[in-house]
Image 1 (tube, helix red, strand yellow):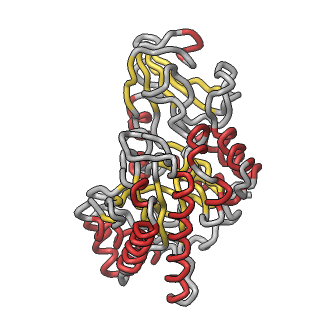
Image 2 (cartoon, helix red, strand yellow; image 1 turned 180 degrees about the horizontal axis):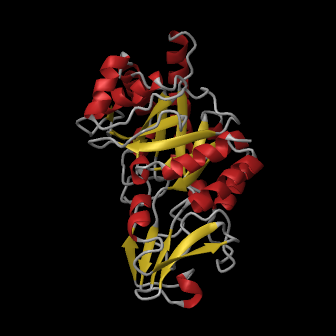
Image 3 (cartoon, one colour; image 1 turned 135 degrees about the vertical axis):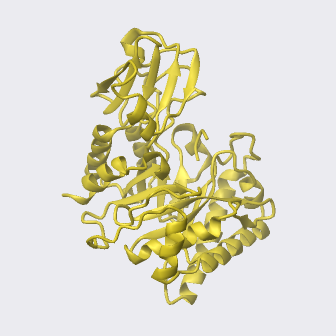
Length: 383
């Protein structure tokens, strides 16, 4: 997602699947089903074998990533173990009855959204396909990760009409989910999207689509990456003193959505469980906001802890203005932007101050010990 990269089972069967796929089931003391302060934690879990440890009591929503869209509107699951994975994830409801499992469609480089959104027939076919997999796998809804309407993105089909057609697609999905819910005793099925800020907003009718959506997962990260000319905070909450006024930041993204009429409770602030590394950076300001010669990858939080933070010549710095940490290696002129417990606590405080819906993170396997998830859980569940 981003520049980078069934049926409910009885506990005995679900636990067996979980064991086979490496998901740790925590029985422990049951947590209250509803978060103490009504802030949701949404985590993307990529399909993998084995699956990472997932603590059902530490988050409210799991977004399975990813299903894909075909040109005529059918939704398919590329992973050969998708059904088993979804059975494992829905089985976690035995530990947290209010846990929601959503299937996310799309991701970075995923195509055919523009083509499917183009006509009423293909929009309805997609909606029917979504309803079919919701019924088959007993999930709680669908998340769309179209990157991005009206824009070429990573070689995807696009057209100016995407802006209106995206609204129509979401309205078709909402109507189909509501019809399905009515047939299932009034059950509410969730409809959400992943959304970027800044110029990407121009391709979406924000206020209109918000009526169809339960919430937006704001991708408030990747602000600096292989496509940007300088280093910088890739997930900064605020602008650094060194950043130009038109640089991107989490608070600016939230302000943009609020100004468009999106209710605060429908916004989840995105956080990243990985960093962005740049080599050949100018040493001024310890590499912050400097030109660089090579993008050096996206180390996971686990990798950052094991080999970067305070190790191998990397020194941690804290930008109080941006509320963001960064690493500088004076020997290799390598700059690394990332998130850590301090920046996540700052973001949780921001969510509370602004009355937002909660947080979303990418991606669960990058934090296998759940250290960062634990910080979000503790920060948002306490008053």
